[in-house]
Every structure is written in structure tokens, then in C-alpha cells.
Length: 203
Image (cartoon, rainbow, N blue to C red; front, side, top):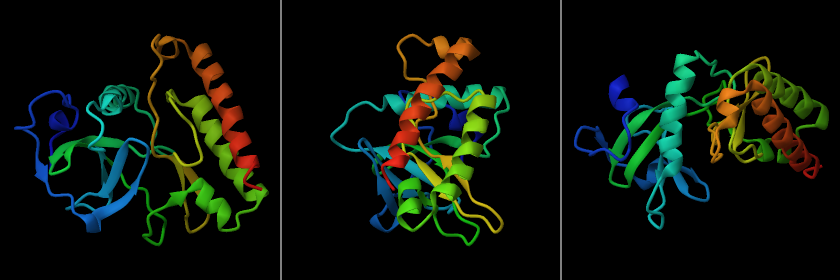
């Protein structure tokens, strides 16, 4: 499909060496403010995120490549993270390839706000968020954003867990959090408060 060296190549480089895939409407999964997500055409365990046509530069993808290298070097666990797997070229433009988070029954995992809307109790959600917070505080993950629509809940046979599907990068101009664990944890604590507040208003 693509080699590791290809997977971590810069999106600004020529696309000639990247594998090409056709992203069709039947592969569409969802979209955010800047990108559209499709199922990978040849591997249903992966998804592809491409920039919407109205945007010219995908700075997020460049950051994801940078931090994918960092997380690989640090051997970061992907228990609560949809891992970045590479770059492809497509009819929709250059796309980042990620793990497509699925439930134990094979369904594509839904966002946390959808999970809550389906009837999850506050106590159920607290168990999930406590586990996620422990992961973030003890794993060198960087966060540019933490929102209920940037995480999904992977439903398992015995227990569920939250997985971050976007924003696991540092977008700060000054990258202090990359070099200081103290600053990193303080930043996560601030984002965590806002994250929990956004959950509370769902009830």
C-alpha cells in the first residue's frame, strides 16, 4: 500500500511517488471544518482525511506527519489514539491516512456526543473520561484541541473507551510543551476543564 518512508513524507513534496487512490462518494464517512474523511478504498481498517477544496494549505497534515514521527520514536501507545499511518494522493488531493476506529461488532465508532445522545449515563461517561485523562497525563501526547466531536467511543465486548481521532498535535507558535512536561500537563489540564464542561452541558 505504502512504505513507512512514504507514509512520513512531507505533503509539500511531489505527489509522483505517492500511491494514488480514488475516493468515491460511497466511501464518505464524515467531515469537519476543514477536512473530509473517507474510508480507505482498499483497507477498511483505515480512513483518509483530505482538505476541503476551499482551503489551499493543509498545515494540520504537516503537523500530523511531524508528531507521528515523534510518537513513533517515543513508542507512544495508541490505546486512546487513532494512529497516523501515512500519506496518499487521491482524486480529492493529498490525504492523511489514519486508523479507522471501529467497535467490537465492526461498526465505525461514533463521536462522544453521539454516544451521550444514545443514552450513556454520566457515571458511564465518567469512567471513560477518567481513563482518557490518565492516558493523557502519563503519555507524551500533545493536543491542539480536545472536543467531544474530536473523540469517538470504541464500544468493546467488555468495556468501552474513548479514542482521540483529531488534534493530537501541538499547534502553539512557541512549542514549550514539546520540551517541558510541566507545561504540557498544564496545557492539557486547561483543555480538560473545557472538555468536561462541554460534556456537562449534554445532560
